[in-house]
Amino acid sequence: MKKHNLEFKIKELEIIAQELKSSICPLRVGATQAVPGEGNPDADILFIGEAPGEQEDKLGRPFVGAAGKLLDKLLASIDLKREDVFIANIEKFRPPGNRDPLPEEISACFPFLERQIKIIQPKLIITLGRHALKKMFEWDRDKIIEKNISIGEFHGKLIKGKKGDYFPSYHPAAGLYHPSTKIEIEKDFQKIPPILHYLPCK
Image (tube, rainbow, N blue to C red):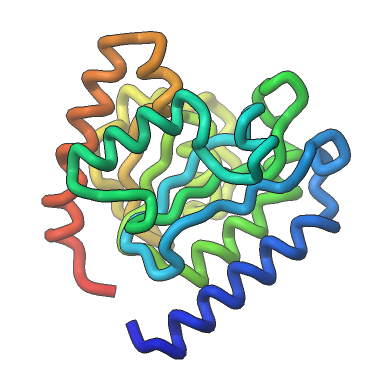
């Protein structure tokens, strides 16, 4: 990546972070602060989760609670660090009581993530959990998907979309409570390096 392109990406991502402070996202009112996302602006991998939790809301950073610690371990298992990837959520503000964000709340905030994707231009988008998977499928296919998506039928598989390449996996939080799910997540992560090698350069 040429230096001036990297500087451009850093600047554009910072603009998004600043705009979130006065955005129309409905959840902004009850949140402590926005959680724009963080990591390498020129990352090959973009991780997308659901929404910030309590710790993320306090610190303004994604995946810094218990699920984030597991994500760090999963990254280390394939010789990656947070600084190597970019981590974000489909919702940029914490829903009250950590409830699932409503469709209209996600839709109001999603344009910020869409802009981040266009700036970063990742080789691979890894969705963590069914909410992220559903929204990214809707975005890629330009239509609302009515039924709930089961991660079980998609996880660990490379999906070629119209707007990018996707690799769905379970949310790390699910691995904290279900040992069998954690094993599946670990298996998914081991598939990431060979998939990246298979995908064309940016």
